[in-house]
Length: 211
Image (cartoon, rainbow, N blue to C red; front, top):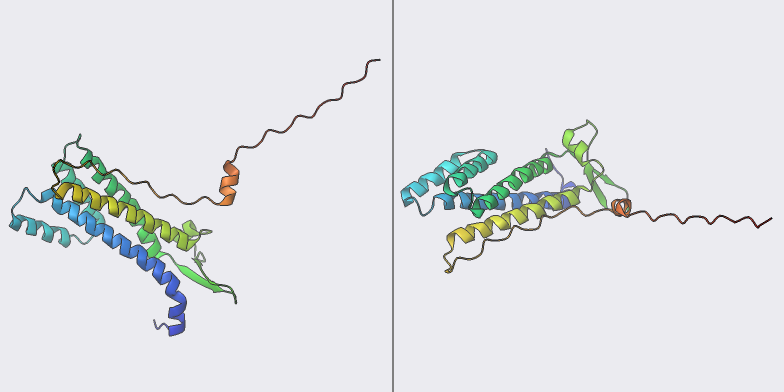
């Protein structure tokens, strides 16, 4: 498929948003790799450590890699260790965000432009594509940014946990707090629907004058 220079320039906003999303996802999975190797680091010699690197990279599926990390974490940390809960939360969120990343990458997209207005990218729902149907009526770029923001939050927490486990700082530092989960901004219509309705003023009834 040949793409002209003009068409490529038109695609730049879409390519930038999708590219940043995928970049953040890849960075998150590097952090998960570090957590996996940290689970083994300190317990095994360097040769076995290199062997684990080879095993991790030999797994072609990222979801399977996360499953390996989940199992390794369950072996290293006891059930009452708070680190176990934090890594399990990271993996749970990564599973959800992995589906979001896949949806963004496989979303059929259409372009509309009415001069002098901006170019608008929307989900192409012509053939009832399931991902396009889910994205129908939503601002595609805002959804991509929300996915990326959530991925970055999980990635930073994974980095914090990795540093907590690997960097010696006597006395032991406090466990990093779980970050606030980014939420989708409410529209004005949603906010209005959640506002409590004001009670209607009761009409005063006229009293009949005495006979």
